[in-house]
Length: 91
Image 1: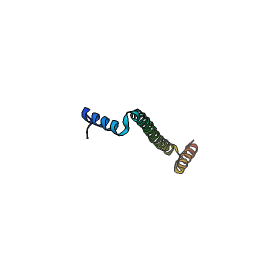
Image 2: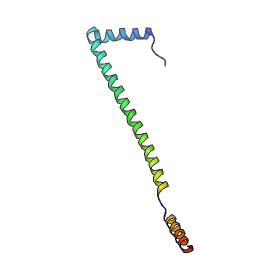
Image 3: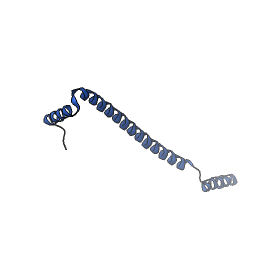
Image 4: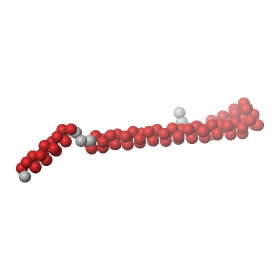
């Protein structure tokens, strides 16, 4: 399915002219143009929302990794306190 050539465009234009008439054709074109503009705007908004959500998910993952790395485990507290007590005993 390729792009339309000149012959196809002329046939479509002639059919539209016969079906809708010369008075309705500009109005129809205007309506189609507005519809396409709204569709493009909606698709751009959807794309932006999707990109924002993906970015937010990545930031949440990075933040959770940082939190996991920075949390102190109870065993680490016990090891630190016992090693500091041993160093005080040796002095």
